[in-house]
Image (cartoon, rainbow, N blue to C red; front, side):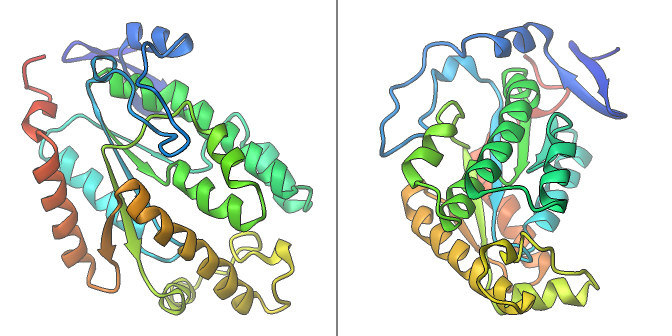
Length: 270
């Protein structure tokens, strides 16, 4: 346990993670008085007094370049002295081995796939995302619940039920959607020398016996879901066919416009 600017720092799995101890305790119980949620807006904000930080999410199909962009954003915020924390989809230690086994042995149905990812998200949300938001951090999420809203629906799960699973989660302050043609996303993955993953290509759905064609079909359907959500949830759409530098400049400008960044510096008054 260490200490930095009034915030305790604990080590989880070899990574530094700053946690407000009182906030962590609150995260285990009720979130507090929340704004009414509706079917139209399942991620409505809770009482603003409950959260001092800001939540930024990035979304996009595989190969969109979103992970590169959120990494660059994280490094920029860190280098300019801001309190920042990063978390990514499907990274909880709680269900990691179960997820790997389920994928490896092809044990997952559409419903269990949905539930195991929801469990992963809930674990990270309660142990990391919410406590850090209450501690006054900028929290960066490489994929948020919108990934489930797209992927699980494409796999045939009821849209309303999927959204109800994530109704405990607050809505991000900013969500970037990195939009890119599926064929370009595929070329990027192959150019990196990476093998197309079985489930990310939708091979478990029997869309095609050719993994590349299956990827095109599956990711195109996911992209269609994202496009429908863009207006509904107010995504900031980034044209991801441009250079990484141009995209990052747009992302930083949007963050500077929407967040009071100086208030998140380590030396800022509490």
